[in-house]
Length: 325
Ligand code: TYM
Image (cartoon, rainbow, N blue to C red):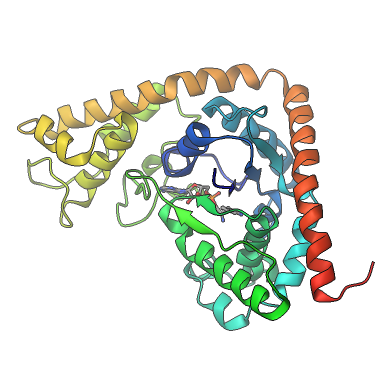
């Protein structure tokens, strides 16, 4: 059994990119030794509203439970509840280099056009490395946009081990066969994203079935008629990827099955499949929202369990680095 860690930020509204890119595997592959984390400390690297963050943290926990994470089988917790994350991040800050952080494409994208960028946003990938390394995770199930961050975590772990002796496991990212990079339905050159700059291009898990259908029916395609994945057919390719993720059928099989269909009918098929997949998740989420106290209690138990592993790792890290006490 591989040890697994992954995380999601409680910022913006969760969308089908999060669901198909990462969460479905979290739910189907979960077992003891798997840690799933709501990374609230990452969510404060950009300007935020405190009340909204509190609300989003609980809401995100409800979504993760609704998707099928079972706190009896895996450990689900909130990052800031386990103080070792920030402590470990500081130690790793002293191992990571400015040069490698400056190369992170996500930092470049997120900081672009801002007058002032927090140090936290720059250090963001080091905190992410701390998340993963504290739990000795071998695998990190994520969407394709996180590849570079996981590679950096691996580099930092390797450098620490070389300098101070074998301490951390080297993690590797794992990606789904389909849905690793769901693109915005209106701007197909951009990945679907929580920042909601494109509400019509993003399908939130919280959207109604009618809204989901409408967005898919209006998705940008091309002027052709063929339903085929190709570099010059980004819109159609994205919808095929989405259909593949929602149904579990491979893209070549879907291309054969859909041959001759019009784009309108194809989009209807995609909308039905997505709504069908999300229906039980949306229903369960609505139920869970009714008892936030129970969700909070579950998160407290998760943090306790996570702390056992994280604190044992930090005892080792402190000793290796020469910190006394
Ligand atoms: P976040 O919160 O942006 O996204 C959570 C997960 O959803 C995936 N994802 C997507 N997958 C496919 N298509 C998309 N359009 C799409 N958008 C998002 C992400 O790849 C991710 O797996 N830095 C991380 C959070 C994090 C983390 C960690 C992840 C903090 N510590 C440790 C793994 C391990 C992030 O911002 O994810």
